[in-house]
Image (cartoon, rainbow, N blue to C red; front, side, top):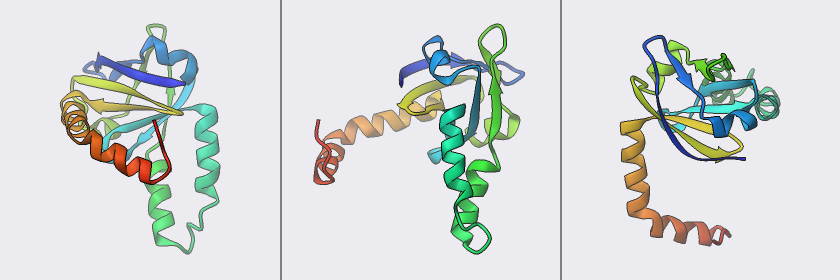
Length: 146
């Protein structure tokens, strides 16, 4: 299970060290794609295959929103592989989308990891921390309890 927060730097060539704690769960081959809120999603290959099956079942020929949803995730998906130093190359289109320049943060989200620009993550995390009581209340109304 992917969990925790880890900071790393992306190098000038776009290579990024995958946190050691994530490597076993992600495996040697994984998929990196656009995520919500301009972060990147990183899926273990098996989880991506399940997600992609669901995307492929959408009526993309006739439904404009389904097509846009598939474009967003499948159109930007890239295979990730680890080199001997535990790094992977983040394609430039994904680096641009997520505003990744130097400092990044990996966030474990259970079935996937997320990669955030550190400054943007700090802003997002501060917003969440400020509103966590209201968020928790809304979650309880939807049946989730701590």
